[in-house]
Length: 109
Image (cartoon, rainbow, N blue to C red):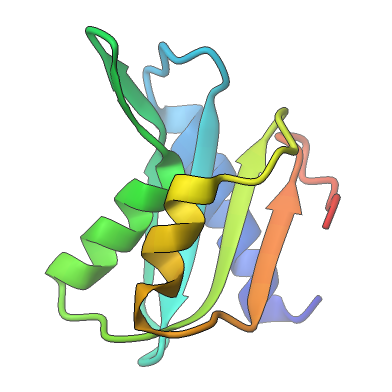
């Protein structure tokens, strides 16, 4: 994994660590757009409504003008795919690098 991808994992871990997460499966995510800018977020659940960390990171990037993504990292104890987040991430085309890691930074995919 190169330094830029390692940075995504670090940002996703930091987002998870900062957040007051009250979800069943807490997660952090970070994305890098085609300009090299990065965005990070943690999963959110309020009164039964939930948004995944990846969905929020992608939404933040899009609201800042991102039009394509180079890479993403998702940090969670749950290694199941984030279908909703993946749909948002791939809305502008396929993303070549998607990294999954555990909260301790261990890469699982």
